[in-house]
Length: 367
Figure 1 (tube, rainbow, N blue to C red):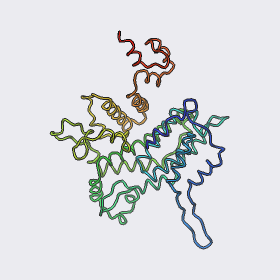
Figure 2: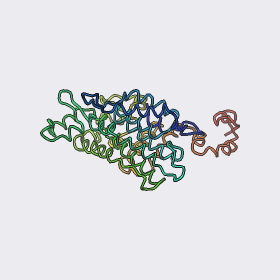
Figure 3: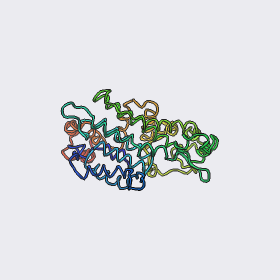
Figure 4: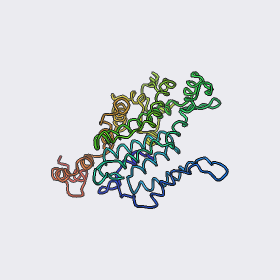
């Protein structure tokens, strides 16, 4: 499931963000359910807090998302996705949320304050990204693991030296045993997450003022530390790999780990296929662009550069839009970017209402 697309795409042409579910009792009960069971005392013992059934939370959140683009709902969905699918899918949720802020600011839920126009309710909704359900999961999530040795997590790395049984050499060895493409994808997901949080605050600052930006420190501190861990212990996996001379007829992006040609369909639908790492993006050549798939790979590589090294740039938004247009014909592109110009284009080309350019060309080959 592509969470970025699911979250950022409008629900309908006339009502992109759907309806306001604020007064829906079942919708409000959903948020109580998503909090899990708090710590409680049964008269004799203190019972620990319990998380919710994350798969059920995700299922219900997706059902409500089909009705309303609600920020709090999306943040809860991101929590559920992180706890069921991991960092890569979590990053997609943040990308989708950032895209909503940039394209649907006036229509998002909860709405802006009627009198002051401030986004205080939206800020309160975003605070769910700093909750323990996110922070504690990121601390515990495995960054790398090796059978018989153990796994590396921020929680383990932040332990005192006398509590941490692994040396730096052992940690590097654990990372070395992991698939480099998976490590690259994880690293890129972390980078995208940081960039998305920055995009959200940039929108808040531009639309409402600097005083309404959200303090994501609890979340960003962990993401930054994750990136530093990868730079320290997985440098070899993140570095670009030069292809063997015997494989010069194949680009690195077209090869599987065993050297065989990869199926484009598998690559297109694999988790995080839109999130290429800086290392792999850096290897994307532009000398032999002979198909739309080559164009997409190059655009993705350019997009990755800006996300990784210039996260404040607005270009990723435009590049993402361009990627959606690659497979469209001329009229479909015009309809997408400037629908008001369609009548003039139809008149210029002699195309009747409801008729395609191809049909007109077939009828009149004098061109």
